[in-house]
Image (tube, rainbow, N blue to C red; front, side, top):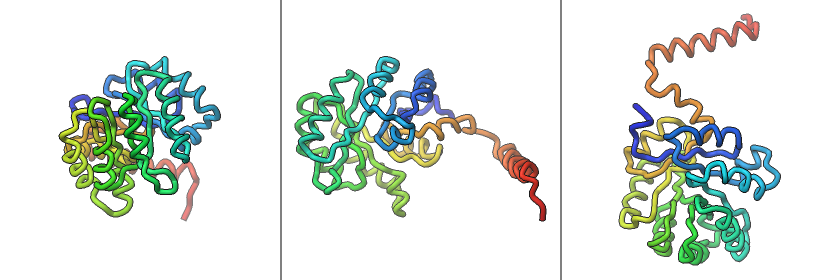
Length: 237
């Protein structure tokens, strides 16, 4: 189990500038993803300033910035503006707005203009097929299938990803991304499914030192952790 030997591209998922710059130094981190929720969690107040500040420092790797409008016309305006900030930007467009209106017409328009897109919040085969039907075949695109949330609903994420990979197989410009990653092992699952990209939260990237660890040693380390925490807390029975 060696991250360096995997074919799948690992993107760091987060909006903390310090962590982004740290992960950018690692050769196995091939790109970055963000979203408005992560930015809010990181305390970012100025969306554009954050993007403009971080872009020159990671201009050799793709990074996804998401639109946050709900009106379809405004979505298009935001997407064009965000795309203008850098050549390595993929504009994240949700599969629908909050009123469940499909964004496929916007996606088709932007894609034909050569704007690289990351279509996000894909959960079903029908959604994926709909987007594959309008994506320009000459424009690079990422299709983010929310495997973790699919698993949260009690469905097999590997089955969903394999189906997505097969559906997109004829589109050389499209890559399937395993999104909403929950655990380090998801990386190896995504690789096995033939997925091209997986986006991994910063907290999971910080667990990579555990990969391949002897499980007996890991067990003892865990027991010691419980013991030391109980001791420091001064627990008594």
